[in-house]
Length: 106
Image 1 (cartoon, rainbow, N blue to C red):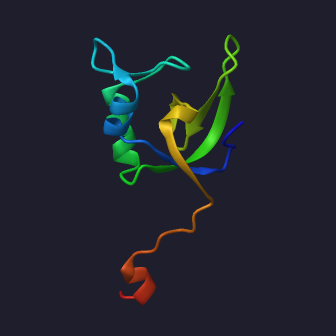
Image 2: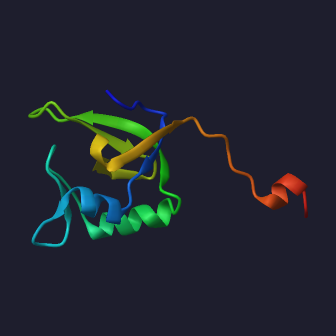
């Protein structure tokens, strides 16, 4: 298992995955191994939740028919992500404070 629950990961952009993998006839990205699709609506929803593309893994699911592990990201319980879709592991990330919180401006 490359990543574990609680890890903070960065998901590759649509453009990165389009170059690395390919588009199918419907315009979706097909990650050939493990045959998982990235649909435009999934990408749109992800961008709304995570504009910086950094999310926490909150669950993992082992495909019973193949030996591939998929990840569930916080706020997206119905979507699966694979190792191939993850750009990097950043471990636990400290909270990011706005300049107003740092300067205690009210």
